[in-house]
Length: 529
Image 1 (cartoon, rainbow, N blue to C red):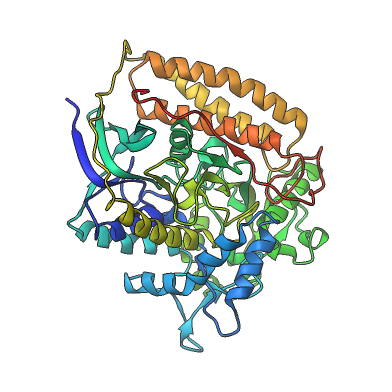
Image 2: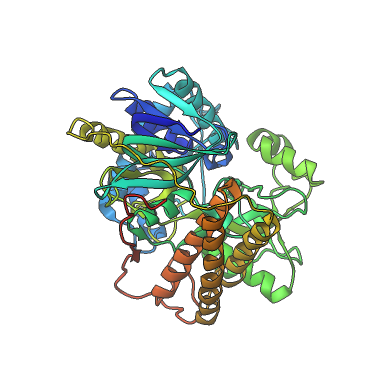
């Protein structure tokens, strides 16, 4: 028997943006907070580097703005960049008030600020190398103590529900009972994170399957700039330890990249060497691997004081030690992998999409802040600021005459239980291998055409499974990664240039007039489940 639940705010996702929105919105109405895993399972929890904010006397808001726009390769929306970065110092103070204990510099009794690629000043606040986990822990404690927030773990949104072109909630799979529940809400907020699992190799957690982007697209929302998939240059290369990111903060503290011959190479590619923007460093590593035939390069910080390394990077030190690498004595084997979606569901500065009552925040959203390439440690900042803006905007909206509607029961049709899970597993693997092979760091027209043709057949097969068989978590995620893969491929083919994180060998130059790419689908029918 499925449940019907009603609230003012339905929030899907529990990273920094989802948690902060929920805390702020709870002052204005009842919040239902959903996660398909547990509260702490999010990309935020894995964020090592920190949160960028111009709080030093040597730094300035204007410098942070210009760094963001420069790294964004001409596609950042200046008004959005200015809005978010000007709120940076206030965000830092708010997080500290919520219990985040950022590291201090013992020599000057001030907050310790890290340096990362693309920044002109030290401005990255951190908690050693586990900043995201500490932010998540502090926010979860506040959310769990808030009586106006009801938490639903192991609940996966399947589709948004629209009535009269307005999103009014979602159909949600209770993973434990395998029933489809109806969550009806005045405001629906997508905070589902990114889509790294669309690719075979990624730093993202397993939950990052582009659910919010796919659901918003099916509901008629505009999607923007998905061709800009940022690859993090340094993921630990190890057969058993998957998806472990080696923070850019190591390079900020002087670590150097070495080729298979143990010689430094980044100075051949950019004047800032290891501190060049991520797209340049990732492409440089990719080129070194292709030229040498090696399967990884090395990142070396072993020449620094061993006590400093262990104190500054405890999580990285311990994980690498488990992998058999003592980073105080030897270099770390690393490879690039998908890390961040710079585009997403098109929104304004308040997280509003172009579908009434639907908001998108965090990595799910395409606000125009990151442009064609994200500046390191700007993502937590954006997530926090847009969560605040969206909560204030949504609080005003629910004061208007929005009446909760009746949502029809989920209609499974003639769906049956499948005994073909091996096919679903195979399709998962095929989509992800297709994307990493044809839509990776360096693209070509021929590869993109092959990807487009193949994803079309795969998506059709997945849709048949979706309608023929009873909903399972793997099937829902498979459908979503296929949808997002199609969108990435379409947008990559639309861009006839190389810019930021998108590099096409057939269009190596950057056009003078930068434009956003956008895609939109017809609005979801009232009972299109």
